[in-house]
Each structure stands twice: as structure tokens, then as C-alpha cells.
Length: 339
Image 1: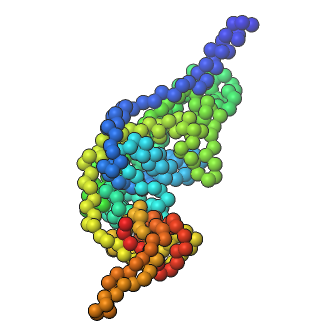
Image 2 (image 1 turned 90 degrees about the horizontal axis):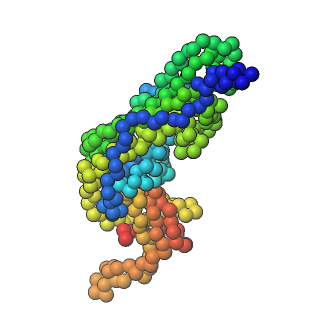
Image 3 (image 1 turned 180 degrees about the horizontal axis):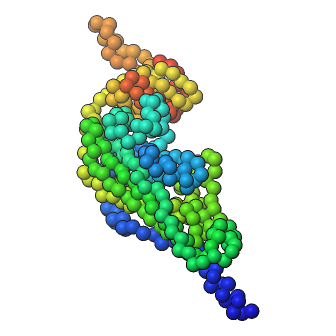
């Protein structure tokens, strides 16, 4: 009886999940921390994944926007590394919607440069997911006549699953559309007796709302480990390129405009990018007061305005801007001006 148990254990060993083995070159060490004021400002667009869409469908069972999920991880990596200042995704998404920037423009340098100028960044990061897949092998050793539990292996053998993810990112000059640098991050992971999304073979479901690549559940899968490895390498390589980015030379412009619409704490201004307004700017909101006139000519000398709050710009186009107001009593016609 003991011999039979020992033999059965030996037969089942190949199907038990083995620890993941992460492969690929180690990312370079991060550069020294850069003071916040000296950091270059960048924006990260969702990565294009058209070339791997078939693999995505095969792995998840449905189409998932892995380009958005991976760009979110890249943003987190760059922010945590402290090499760049990164535009907040909500502000960027609002601008992309207003500019009718479609998914087909994700890797287009000229469109990216236009968006980057409106965002007021030094460079914009675009890219492609060039590999997102598996390389499985099953070495047979004869059949045992049954499926071994939820692994679905109908024959005795060692199943090895390997996931590899490759991402190429490009830093684009917003003034010229020139590609300043191109880097590629690659991550791999492999297990014995597992599948792409199975935690030990039991499977994983991303849900109808889309896969959350930042979740620990996804991160523990074999494809999740490959994604994180590729993002870690890509982020380190992008950090190393920070020094080559030219600072955007924005001529000093004194902004002067009016509040055109008020909806709660959201203001629409009658000035935009053409007047030097950029996403992230904070402008004073002023209420017109007593006008001082020249006693000799009767011409206005100055208006004694009073500040009633500030507005932080979240979205701009050529002739208008939208921002969040902090203060009280704002109304249409109030003045806005540079600090």
C-alpha cells in the first residue's frame, strides 16, 4: 500500500504549481532623485496594443484594453521613481476627449505632440505593446486515463507555461514631433503545471469591466508577473533618458480674461492656449471694484479689484479653458489674471 501511495505522489508531482521564475535582463538602477522643480514634465498616452489583440483575446477570453492598464502602471512607476512630473490622467483624459483624440492616434507622433503642447509638458510618452503572450510546452510521459482535477491535463506530463511581455515607449518632443528616445522593456515569467491566469491552475477572471492590472490578484498571475517585469524595466530605462529632454521654453505671458460660465465650482474662461494658459496653471479670480480716474483727463488709471479666489486649470483649447474654482461668490464676468 505504501509503495502505491509513493508511486501516486511521484506521478502527481509534475502537475503541482511551481514557483514562478522571472526572466529577462535586470532593469538599470534608478538615477539619483531629482528636486521637484527640476523634473521634466511628461504625459503618458495609452499604449497601442493592436498587434497583440489576438493574444489578448486568447488569454482573457475577451478583448481587454491592456494599453490603458499598462500605461497606468508606467505612470505609477515614473511618479514613484521621482524622475519626472507626470500629468494627472483625469486632466489628460478630459483634453483628449475635447480634441477627439481616438485610440487610433495612440502611437501617432504628430497628434501626440499637439496634445503635449496643450498640456504644457516637456515631452509626451507614446508606445506599443509588441508582445503579450505565451509559450507553453507539454512533455508527455504516457497517459493515466483521466483528467487530473481542474488542470485539465488528460495525460501524464510536465506542462510548462511561459509568459513574455514586451513594451516599446518613445519620448516625443512636443515642439517638433521628433522622437528623442526609444526604449523597450521586456518581462518574462514561467511556471510548471499552470496556465497564464491560473493561480495554481484554478483560473482567473478579469471581470466584464476590464482587467485591473494594478490589482494584487492580477499581479500574482504568470502574465501579471511578466507585465510588471516589463514595466519595471521600461520605467528604469525612461528614467535614464530624463536628462536628454529639452525644457519647454514657454514665453512669459500675462494672462488676462473673464469668467464665461459657472457650474458649481467649475469655471469656463474666455482665454485658452493662445493666451498662454496651460493645464495646471493657477490664476487669480478678481471682482472689479472702484475705478480710479485721472482728474485732468477723466481716463481710467486703475481698477481697485479684490481677489475672491483662484482657479486651477484642468483643460484648455485654443480659445478657452476650464478649471476648478476655490473661493466664494464667483460669477460670470469676474476677471481672471496671472498670479
